[in-house]
Length: 318
Image 1 (cartoon, rainbow, N blue to C red):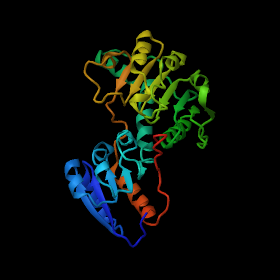
Image 2 (cartoon, rainbow, N blue to C red; image 1 turned 90 degrees about the horizontal axis):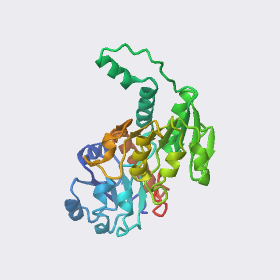
Image 3 (tube, one colour; image 1 turned 180 degrees about the vertical axis):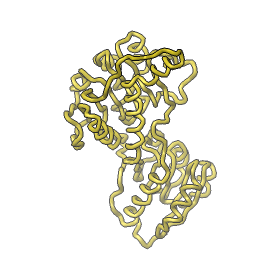
Image 4 (cartoon, helix red, strand yellow; image 1 turned 135 degrees about the horizontal axis):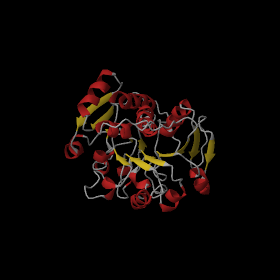
């Protein structure tokens, strides 16, 4: 990387480029020249000398091979799957957005879990019919939540679960760093992990290793009382197996924010599968001030030749 006296050229390639440009400019980042664009074709021409990119992987993937001086790309998303295409160069540092979605994901996950336990939607349906509904509500207290993935999002969910006095189980590749997880599982222990769960919450990234992990065998191993909540990536879930399980009543229900194909096709059976809530990839939208603050922090590390936060391993794809 360059030393602190060198001028760095930043290309902001984002649908929100003007907003990010205003924040970065006001931050007074040293030795930085900024170019903005929301169009990859324009960016390829104007950003040829840039050594830093900030923006959305869906746009940056079209230009990375045409910008030979880029040494670092800071993604404004957590997911960077478009950058793993075999035809794209990988001789640069890729960092993604982490530790910025935990609060919103907790709002989403526990919002639906509370709604399920307190029978909020069912009571609303009773109200519309003029029916006095005295059915006994459930409670999150004492329930077992399984976190499939205990990264920055899973760790935040674990802490929130303890607020509700839930028992927290975590499944990870190796790490056991979150103190709010009561019991960890790894490797082939995944079937033991799902045994007895009331809620299975998946926040895993979409990688070669996680593709189809939530398959028919794992869904069948879940108790009939269990709800599946997927806020990670659609590729982790076998959607056909889930439709089958829900129609068979072998799962209580599913809350799905992400899908293999987005937007979800109107002909997809999930639209009409019982006890399924679809939320169209809205669980945790980018909160621009947090994403901008992450870039600013990483830029200061970059110009001083220090390791960047949240670097992505191209081989492991996260």
